[in-house]
Image (cartoon, rainbow over all chains, first blue to last red; front, side):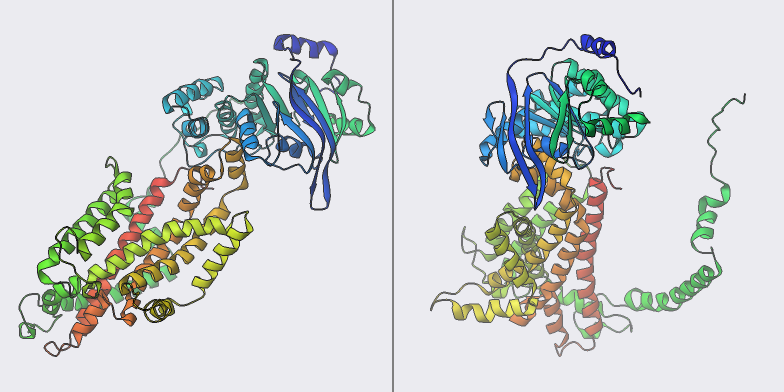
Amino acid sequence: MSETVTEDEIRSHHDHLGHEVGRDVVIQIEQMNKWYGDFHVLRDVDLTVHRGERIVICGPSGSGKSTTIRCINRLEEHQQGRILVDGVELNNDVKNIEAIRREVGMVFQHFNLFPHLTVLENCVLAPIWVRKEPRKEAEERAMQLLERVKIPDQAKKYPGQLSGGQQQRVAIARSLCMQPKIMLFDEPTSALDPEMIKEVLDTMVTLAEEGMTMLCVTHEMGFAKTVADRVIFMDRGQIVEENEPHAFFNTPQNERTKLFLSQILAH
Amino acid sequence: MAVFELKEALPPPARSAGATGWIRANLLSSPLNIALTLLGAYLILTFLPPLLDWAIFSADFTGETQDACVSGGACWTFITNRLPFFTYGFYPEPERWRVNIGFLLLAAVMIPQFIEKIPGKQWIGLFGLTGLPILVAILLSGGIFGLESVPTDKWGGLMLTLVLAFVGIVGALPIGVVLALGRRSQMPIVRIVCTTFIELWRGVPLISVLFMASVMLPLFLPEGVSFDKLLRALIGITMFQSAYMAEVIRGGLQAIPRGQYEAASALGLGYWRSMGLIILPQALKLVIPGIVNTFISLFKDTTLVLIIGLFDILQTVNSSIVDPSWNNVATEGYVFAAFSFWVFCFSMSRYSQALERKLHTGHKR
């Protein structure tokens, strides 16, 4: 992996993405704070995400990047501050939480497919039970999405019979079946064998090309360079630096960012 | 440069396959194994022939009284003569067809569950857990639809054992699930209530539960209010076993990775749907051995109802053995009782193993 990226490299990728970031805000996080016991994990996090924007969040482990995106669909509860997702405020109101979870898809590091259900059943479960779609309709769309992640022939298999990369692509398809407006990726390639990382990243790039709003916690700097509109660097619960990828990788402002980049890009 | 060639897959060496291979590997693999094989053969040859001789070849099966038992082997005549008593207890003879229908209904529900491809067998099973107990209760106790009322103190034998075990099983599983979920609840009051319930019932012996149900409970009830002794025993057994069941199921719930809960939440599934569609199906499957273990011990624990004066199958055998018109039939009687229990418990065990195989979806690690 090269240590610097040329502007041309980024531009060429972005042209082919043909992306257009909308002006309307879909996620607004203001002064979010969170503690685990006495430990202050998130400190005054501010983040605004526009429709169609692709954001990569990176940082050392324990920096609060996963916790940040897990707060967006309330897998973690923030204790101070405000989170608005698509105009709905996240608070203790179960109705709001449910409404937001319907619009926000999430892909996990360890896939978290349901092992007792087939691939197809994994995909149609939430549309049928949460969105109350007729089974036939849900299955049709699930098959389309499985085709899009290039594994329609595995639909009748169980997750345990699939490779890691295939499982993660099923997990992406499962999230997409709910037709979310926003997709959260929590280190989607960290648990994969090197051979399988590419197939998952390709799927994510395709998704980005289609204009999905995406927040990705990842260590795949190649992905960040080619796909992200903005890269956010977090350390010890704070957003240290955020910038568009060219500036982020070539002229990092903060010492902590420079150190981090030199470490992960060095090898 | 050397060219890489994939080597052809070959069959395993002949000595490790086939009958000789099996005998070699399993019976004669080491000096100790050879010694154990010889010892096993010796024990079988010493004990099996006399046992078979007693139980089958020299045994008597027909006749009406002790006098028919002349061959010197087992006197199964005693069993065949007393079989109606062992099966129905004191249930009035002209009404026993109702019990038979009950047995048939039970078989009609159970047998399809053992057969692989029967359409709609889950609906048959669901009926077995809901409609069947009510239907059979009406059928056996009577009093409506022109059926003569048969008080429960006339019930006995195998029929009573099955009623106790079936109600215990059908009741303990759902109550156990609710208690297990309650004990893991975020809500403190629900958690405290469930934990207290489980620990109270689990902390006392079943015998004392039955004593309480039959002796103490009526003392606390207002004057003139009483309800059926069998019903009280059923409630006692169900509560007692559901406390055990709850802990078995809680073990399964704890084994489900947190990611499964998170994935269900992230997809927008609420608590009950996450539990019903994602968590419980996996948790229950994991603890099938534990659940069946509880069922089997429940089935055998039903014999304890003898201390509150109910005649289950073991007690019908017990009381027949002391009948002066039959001598020395204790062995036959107990062998019969043991065999009856074994048949049911072994069927449960086999069923659970088949279920585990069927539900195995290749995610075991």
